[in-house]
Length: 196
Image: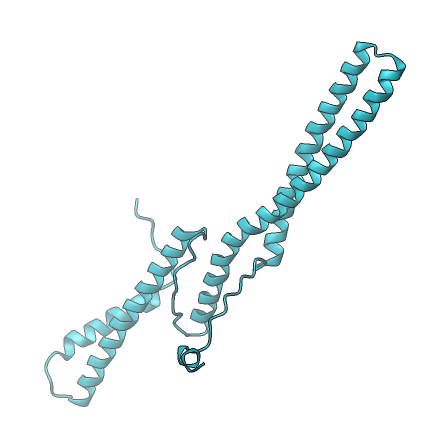
């Protein structure tokens, strides 16, 4: 009992597959509808071909009753197959869209934190997640922003030191660096001239 209390609370892993309900259900239903439509059309054409072949054979009445019964079973099997396939496609679609919706959800959260002025603590994506190249680009962008912020903070510290001791050398270089920083800040977000 004492050993269990020393380990701390057990971490509970939750898995929510519907992260972005609208996105995931929309594309999953598109996948299911396309699969059902293709299967139903193929099944219909196969069944029609079966009926045409039956009519060409000229089967007697007793045998025709048996063949029609088999055709009925075939229709039930075909309908069951389409239903099972729709369920499998639905589950697969939710699973696949989860791998896309998860990274988008995480990146949206990080962007919201950046917009609020906070620096997000980046964690890596899960093993099966998609959009890894996009996430890596986002992480690189965040690292560049952190680096720029650190450089600007260092420049501001130098300026503060110069203000405290007015007679020190190097104030012209710091003023130049401050002007360059101000120019970069003003140009940030402006369209850059195309380099061709």
